[in-house]
Image (cartoon, rainbow, N blue to C red; front, side):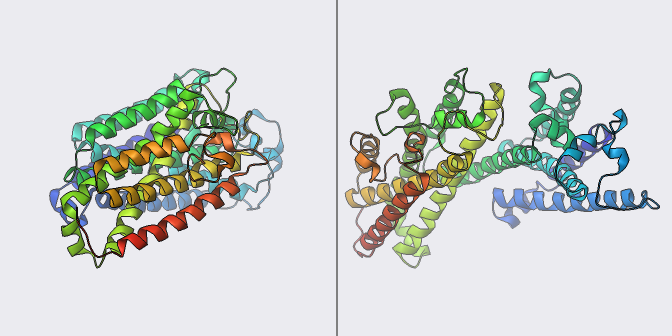
Length: 441
């Protein structure tokens, strides 16, 4: 475990010093944004990390001079000797030793990269050096404690599960779950950085701090309060029930209410931003754009990026909440009648398409009525028409991303086709109303 006791503190200390050295005001001016600054930090640190790993690999290969190279397991690896406990579990897999070697390098690089991104995001969101130093100390001490002192039920918090491939395989029983967990943590860090960067832009225009905080807390409470049934043993079942929404036959009020809080709450924040732009700044914005269409495409694409970040963040928080509750990452769903791929496809793609439909319909309502109540009326319509008693046969683009609609007879791909069809129709409608030259707000 020399990696934990030597390399991690060295790498964390180096990252902290590099981040503090690069946090001068002239760097932010040159890079133009907080997200650009973080990208610069991450790129430079990863470049150095790649060089360090390459040197490590070259030195390791030099030490094996004289040993014959072959892409198969040796007789020692296939034996039941206690001394080869780090290798023997892999011999039963139909995977080349070379591939496992490359996966080990990738896992180690991913973990070190995750540490650098976590430290960068922490400093970006707080702007305080003592927070950065405290987090670095916590990461190092936490790595040691997780290796020695955590109870067996918390093995998924053991840092070795994300550094050493054999321990990752022993914890999650798959080769790739450790990579997925690191990816989700990195995604969460970038999401926090993106919100920090966008908050600076939006704060100049409209106060979103209080609604955003309330929205975040409500979303967070739903993950930890809901899905607590003892029969739910998988994080994917936790995701399934958290965003169950409505079914063909009916709905539960609490389930549908939380479903609306997450998706329609995002649309409410989108409407706040749109209201401020249209109430005064629209004339200044048009000076910077060639046309209303050009401005709208830019505005809508920013909303789409935030929608994707929301969905991926919800997926990450669901996994973390499920693990905290003691649920596993088994790639199956006990309650859903469709495979896991379709569950993730429906949640990510159809969830994004649903939000895109809501954004376009909200834009049309606010643009036509030109009053603040227009957006609230639109949200009320989304909420009511999303009920299965009104949206009969599910041909209208409301609440179609509910997991309750998924079944072998009612596939996620049919829902995708419906949402795409309405998205095209709505986009044509938006482009039509934007062609009118008269603008009065």
